[in-house]
Amino acid sequence: RNIYIASDYSTDNTVKIARSFKVRVLDIRPNRGKARALVYIMKHYRLLSRFKAIVIHDADVEVGKDYLKNAHVHINARNINITSIKSK
Image 1: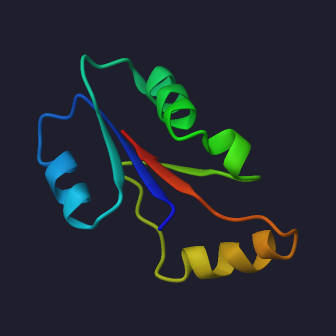
Image 2 (image 1 turned 90 degrees about the vertical axis):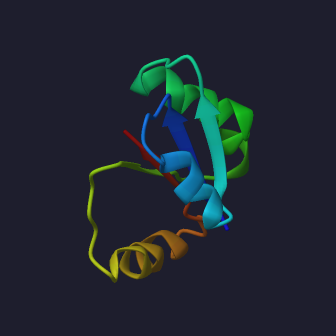
């Protein structure tokens, strides 16, 4: 799975819940702020050199059930993989 989560010093159960889904999670402490957390996770997992496109979502974003399926059709037409980073 190409799901990466940057938990920027979350005080809730974000890290525990995300890890239960077997996705890649960085528990960033102390917090760096959104922009630095995104840069950190992209560098840590070398995302910019591994993928042609990255989809970033904030923690409170709700997408429709067909969101990735529909996005994948358009991105796949350009031979690009989808990676989603959920940030707060």
